[in-house]
Image (cartoon, rainbow, N blue to C red; front, side):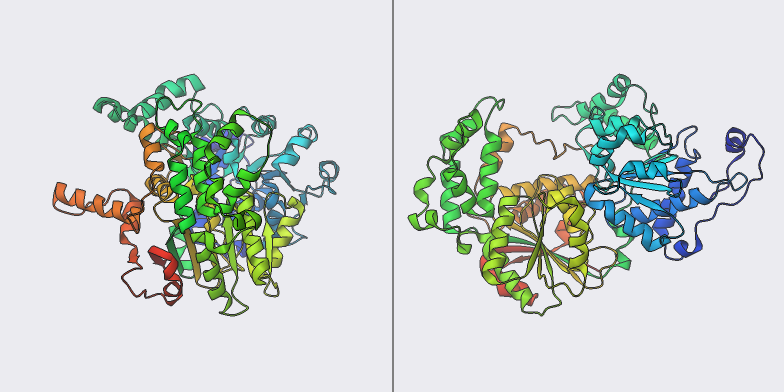
Length: 620
């Protein structure tokens, strides 16, 4: 660890104790990768006040799978045992607050690296209360969920913690929520936020995170808004003047320079060379005749047309978007919405008006059965893929991810119909059972072939290296949600080539959402995304008109747009100009129009009849 400078010694070594070297445990050090050593060094300098005078907070914003947990365990163990002045330990007790599904995983990681004898770690659950930790001097580390923190904050305030770590800490982006208030009530200056997700859209959310780890460093909120937020947002307006753009870019650079002293973000590229190859395919699925008829009917409805006229305030456009997304997953999701009887409300009335013309499209047979696999283009592709993977043998396993419980219900029934052993983790799965389900699936003796995963409940932090195939069945507005989900299998501990498949319905709203994603991911290396974020979905009428368009004459609208982008920039400069990083990368992927080519991938060649286009990339 770095030697404290003279000014640090004057501030923190007033007893003139001998200055000694601080060394990370040799066993742990021998297993650290270069970026992890750098991360531990960074965290140590931050919490010791070596990077910013009298500031002791940090944000470790590495992408998923880079070992943020191990870096923190190394830091905690080092600070519990030693310090630079007289070798006195820097901290006595540490608090780790994490999503409920990750509490046991943190405990497992402490046990893996330090065993049960060297350090005593207390995990709070229904049977083990905070009072036990408070009353026992044996325990050095308390790990609990955000929910348990709120329930136990009065007891926790009675205990002195020298270090607080907030895992998945981007949930503290609102300074007014109870969780943030509870954490701020703890008298601890050393605070670390861990997050793999950049803060999107809202610069006030970014301020809230900074204010938690290093209070006051950006000044009062009113001044921050005037100096940074307003110029940056003004520069992003379509009609922004050149001087506004220059000022906004200048203030954004200043903000990143200031906060960069205590924020560290690395992308997955730093560990690619340590991982097995990853083959990623984006599969554009041909919509079925039923889906096309329903899609046209929805777009021609009075309620959709009304969204494109006048003010969007109180407009039902989000209901229309939701209906189109359901239709892309499976038409039966719309049928269930039509058949569902609910009390009258403004929203339900809008749904009734939207769905009114759809009932006649469904046949009497489809209204009486649960669903047909042949009614959804994506489901046809999925069932073919599962059959092909299953034929490879019992060692092959698949994670299938969806954002929606109703869609998971459909996928579960597919498993039951075809006799595939499966396990499932969604919002209804008790938090206390989630780690056990994950551990069981990762065991080589697990009989399950498929892991059905809700991206909302299990897309963050879980390690599912027992599978080497992951299928993302639907798409989220927020690219970080999809990236988090895909990172469950391609991470440390994976020994097999990983195959990731993203399913999109050709020509529909799913392609439009994907296009918004890739336009935003260019800034994913930043902790704050200064583009319009995707967690707060706001649309202009023109954007809605684009969303509410069905492209039946294209095998892949996204590919067509990429070609137009290249042609435009070629005509402007005589060379192909690559726009954002992600657009550039996508241009470098292999593009296959399945109508005209024999695919080099035998697996995809087998299912190409239900596809229109493929993007594919191999990372090795």
